[in-house]
Amino acid sequence: MSNTPKAIFVDDDLNTLNSLRRVLRRHCNDWDIEYCQSPAAALSLMSEFSPWIVVSEKRICEMDGADFLHLVSNQSPEVVRVLLTGAITSEVALDLADIAHMLIAKPFKPESLIELLHRAKCLHELPVSPVMRKQLGSIKRIPVLPRVYARLTSYLKNDMVDLHEVARIISHDSTIMAKIIQLANSSFFGFSRPVSHPHEAVVRLGQGLVKNLVLFFGISKQCDITDIKLRDELLAQAMHIAMISRQLSAACGCLFKETNDSFVLGLLHNIGSLMSSMSFIKIEANDDTTDYCEENAVGAYLLALWEFDEELVKAVLYQNSPQNSDVITPLCCRLHVAKVVNNAQKNGISALSEASGLNYELLQSQGLHDDVVLWINQFESEEQGEN
Image (cartoon, rainbow, N blue to C red):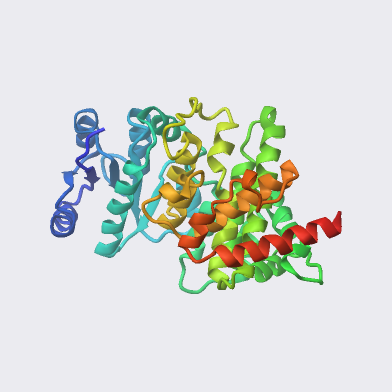
C-alpha cells in the first residue's frame, strides 16, 4: 500500500466539493484527495488511485450514496467507507449499518472531517496485512457494527438522552437485554437489590458501559454454531479479565471513567481471537519476531474502525508486549496485570511468581508497582479463602 494518504470525496453538488477542498487543503495538505461529482467517476478511479478512504454524500442524483458504497465494498473491500447524510436517526443508522463503516451527520464541522482523515491514517498504520484488510472489508455483518449497537450509538449522540429510550433500544434484542440485566445483578458490581427491567439495568450500569456491552454481546451472537465451544471460552475469558481489570482499577484509586475503560478494554481485548474463531476470516500463523500477533492487530483495527479511543486501540495491539508500545499508559498496564492474574489462576500459581510473567519493570515505570503487588496479595488471599 502507498504511504501517501489518499481519499475520494463524492458529491454532485460542486459548491459542497469546493468547500471541502478549501477546508482540507488548509488542514490536510499531506493528503492526495480526489473530488468527484458522480459515483461513476469515483468508481473509475478506484483501482488506479487506491484510496484509503471513500466519503460519499448519501443523496446523489445519479445513484444513492449507500448503493455507491456497496459497489465500493465489492470492488475494494479494504477501503474505509463513510457516508455523509442528514440527521442520523436510529432508524437511519440501522438501515445503513450493513454498508457504511462510519456516518457523519450534515451539517458537520471541519473538525469532523479532519478527525475522520486522522482516523483513516491510524487505521492504515496498524500492522494488518492487505489480505486481512480485504477479508475484514468483505464481511457484510462484521466489521460493520451490529445493528442494535449502531442504533444505540446513533441515539446516544443526541444532546438529551432518555434512559427509557436506551432501554427500549436494547430491548429489541432479547438475548442482549437478558445478558445486560444478568450483569447488572452480578454481585461483582456490589448491588444487593436485584433488577428485572432494562431501564433499571441501564440506570445501574450507566449508558456508556451499556453501549459497549451491547457491542460485546452483539458480536458474540454472530458466531457460527460450529464455533460455540470456542466462542464461549473466549467470551468467558473476556468477561473474567474485564472484571479483574475493573477490580484492580478500583483498588488503584481510579476514577469512574478509568475504571469503566479498564472493564471495556478487558471485554474487547480478545476480539481478534473471537473473529478468528469464526468462519468470517482466516488468520495465518503468527510471526514471533513482532511485538504483536495478527489476532491483536485485527482487534485493534476493528476498534479503530468503530471509533474507539486511540489509547484503547494501542492497548489491544500491544497487549502481549505493552513495554514496546510507543506510548505506555496505566490502562494497558492494568490489562497486562489482569491477563497475568487470569493465567496464574488457570495454572495454579501466584501472579507474583517469576513464572507468571508479571512485568515488574513496566509497573514501576508507571508508578503502579506497589498498588498492584498489594492488590494481588489481597486478591489471591481472598481466592484461597473461598477455596
